[in-house]
Length: 446
Image (cartoon, rainbow, N blue to C red; front, top):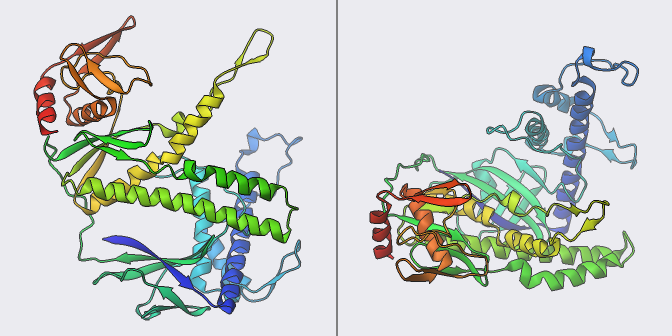
């Protein structure tokens, strides 16, 4: 089993300078290797018979500078000082631990492979970018030895012993495998990857039943974050909404200052700390909510499979016959997009999967189509608008919160007993089989 613990460290002034210097050297190496990869890609990605010799002269072809070739260059780069032409710096890569340099090269090739080949699902990432000093914030020690951590101090090669705040002890039996040193708005942190081979990592097969499963519906209305099939409404934290006025005030004040001035840097740091506070508040709420759901003794969590990228898109522009742009309600959509992003349902799904997996459970994402429009008690079609917050069925006289009704239907979708829905000429046709029996069991359990 593998877990990651993050601790804050308190380096001295001299150690801070050393950490920033190593970060600068890794940034240079990253940009140099990435530039070499991009240069090879631009000059060798087209076949000879498909490239115009007039508009695109043929360069000198060379082999792909793969990971092994770049790794073999490191000993030669460490032999002498490297002159950075645009800044006049003299950089000494021999002052950086070898594993840190090797991991930096690996990061380049991983980013480039995701751009060219894609990940395991075939999804490609964007073109890798060169890193500035503010965007390159971490470096990694790929092998942590047993003697590095001693009490409240950790020994890092080429840096020395640094005080570490162990706010929670390392669990017995776990050993540190890797160490990531990162710089954040409020200081320096170390992330330890811990592993215990005695604990199995495979996912246990869980038999899905009505009793050990729960449906979860995402909610943006009011102060509600989630609704469950157990008739529970979990409140939201709205981290960004609470701090957006203060953030706008600081950003406006910062934009009025002269670039590269001391006052602007001070406000930039203040703005970064506020962004960090917002992100931490949201993440803390997601962890607490996940633990709250796992403590219900449920093993299977049915979650909405939301297309968050599509839900947060801008509205398409509207034009008349003369090409003049017409109102498209983008102002209202921007507020909705902000609420979706502030809730962070994507991050919550990942955290819930992690917490449920440690407890022997699993998260299953299901399609939420028509779950808020169908009565969970009698399968009657009850159309609603967004402002209708109460589900009221005239067929069976059931009234409940519309989000709880949707959560029950999401559970039914996961159990495979949600009625089949067909559309013919604009009319909704519901084909219900034995779903009523399971529906009544769910209603009784709530």
